[in-house]
Length: 115
Image (cartoon, rainbow, N blue to C red; front, top):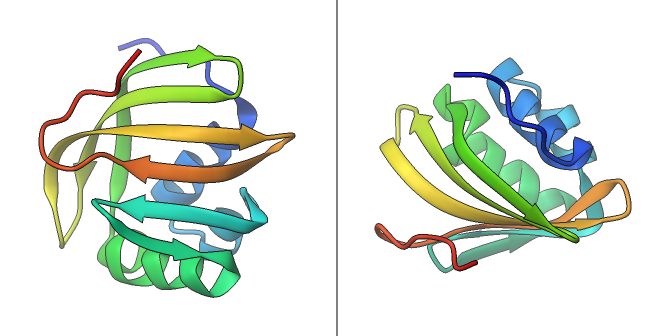
């Protein structure tokens, strides 16, 4: 599949996960950035590092974007995820603030991101 063009902040977060780089992962977010993983919300540097450790980088995760649509500061994605915690496809929504992520929401179940 050809590479999709996404906002730089989104691509930096994905690259950080795939490269196993926790510092780059946290740096992709604003200081008060959040991750909402099926309703479990973690925020700020401590919360982002915790999620990276337990659900992503510490779980040897790889993230592959299948589809991505960006409108303004919102990017909606369908992605493949492979890790020691979860394997399969999910949908998510990124909110960009300047050159960083304000939030990444992983939608629960098989929910498709709304347009």
